[in-house]
Image 1 (cartoon, one colour):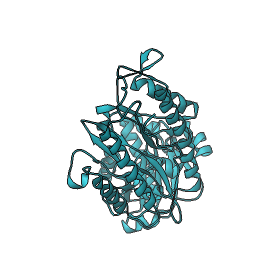
Image 2: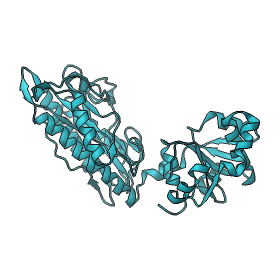
Image 3: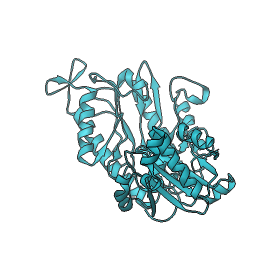
Image 4: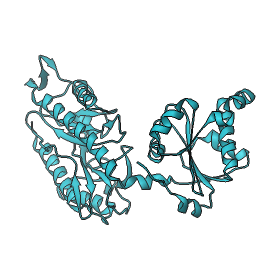
Length: 388
């Protein structure tokens, strides 16, 4: 990625001289703005000039020059960090002193910061005479419109995700049903066994996942319970995998619900309703369509099948939003829920309606869609089959 992340219009609206992010390895905005991350603390500054500055430790300077899209790379040592540390006896304050010196030399007195900015640094800068302006991140909106290279990175993660999902479903399919239990090679098949299979496939494909859901029966009625213990026959198993590429750092996301054995009429009706709702939602996706209209259509379909939704305040049935954007974070803009947000070409969103009833379990089906010029492309190709 090359070029400049120009946010001067936003700075002008806020009457700010600059914008700053203090990053860490998990800061998606920082990585998006710089194409760089490190385990040490590091800082990105954009002035109203505009000028972009990356501040790293001396140890990271060489790698930053190779990897970052920022040309102006400075180190703490350029601002006598060691001497400031000796004087202050506090690494945090010495770091802030270096940043303050940079801001002063760049003529920045009114500084925009994102809402997750470190409190200590903000407070120290305020005490040093800087005006701190709370700003919504300018990069989150930019991140919601994916470039071609970002879409390819998401495809990469999704390819691994589908391999892992197929392996998980195949493992359950190959299990034996004995007295309501699922046995594999003579032992009870557990949620951890399936997760292990998923992790191995993902690692082999250059991806990793944290929080993978393999939830069976009543566990599946809690949408984000990861699941534990033996898997059972004749009960729904929700599998939700959201891996990140270790190289490119972009996520993918998909869910399938499967059942080994026979489904009760209630479970089959739940599955059919969720599948129908998802299809209706996907058919609506194109630029200009409101996320709230998609969400309301999902609620309409599920209610028409006799199920409760969050729209009437229910605590069972469909109890979450319809979907979310995917990119450098697993949940990012745009969010497909009650807000009237227009879809735009380049959005990558997950559509994941679900139904959750403690007496029966849960059903969730999730695909990932790229919003195109006149519709959408489904980036998820794995079949949707309930009974395996």
